Amino acid sequence: MAVLVGKKAPSFTAPAVVNGGEVVQGFSLDQYLGKNHVILFFYPKDFTFVCPSELHAFQAKLAEFEKRGTKLVACSTDTEESHWGWLQMDKKNGGIKGITYPIIADTNKTIADAYDVLLGEYQYDENGALTATDTMIAYRGLFLIDKKGIVRHQLVNDLPLGRNVDEALRMVDALQFNEENGEVCPANWTKGEEGMKATHDGVASYLAAH
Image (cartoon, rainbow, N blue to C red; front, side, top):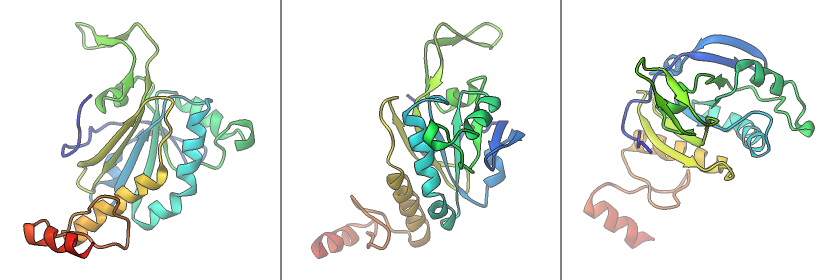
């Protein structure tokens, strides 16, 4: 699996459903360059079980991400029509009604492939077209992208393992703390705690105080 940390996030243009029901064509993360940090997270499939719990959990923390100038964007290999239909279903019926952040339709699987979170056996033919012998869906990948479009954190879970949204928020805090203060974040650091200067003296002083 590719490590994208420290590299430019793969660029793409694809359909997406935004604001809980508006289908837009040509959605791209490029609109956030120079303006916002981005959490891009992949999930396997619409109308499933673990996936709605994650989507609702991210929505519940949306205001916290927005306070930090961070955009949440979801992506799966389902179509925009599938996303739209799922968004019309109430939560009590297994739907994701109430989700307002964008959900990208990676129907041709190229975005999941570019981020190396695509599950399934596949190859490219002599014409460069992707062909598959198995169902292709995305692992639970998550990527924190800075304002310059560089991936600063990535996490990939297998299909049965739901993510911790608070940890994603903590990583945003840690990145922004480092960007603003130039200090690094020790183990289990949370917002409001001290960081460490990335020098021998700085680390020694921190450890002595803790």
